[in-house]
Length: 99
Image 1 (cartoon, rainbow, N blue to C red):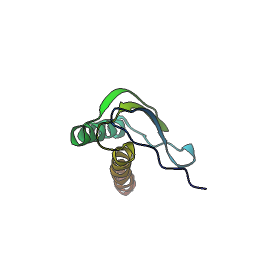
Image 2 (image 1 turned 60 degrees about the vertical axis):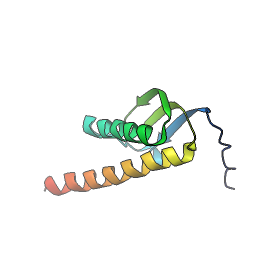
Image 3 (image 1 turned 90 degrees about the vertical axis):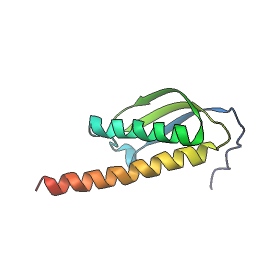
C-alpha cells in the first residue's frame, strides 16, 4: 500500500534521509560528495528552502531543512534525480577509463 501524500505547509521543518538501493554506497569519492552539496546549493537557490544541517555518509545522507512555498517532494526528487544521473554517468565513465 502506498504512503499517503505528505501535507505541505510553508515553514515546515523536515529531517530527510536518503539511501542507496539495498543500503549500497552512493558516495565513493569526495568529488561525489561535493557534487551532491553543489546540487543542494542549486536547489536551495531555485526553491528557497533553508538548510539547517546535513550529514553525508558513504551510503546515505541526512538533511534538516525548512521548506518555503515549494513542497519537499519536489525539492528532494530534483536533487536525487540529478545526483543519480551524475552518479550513473560518473560510474560508467570511471569503468571505461579503468580499462
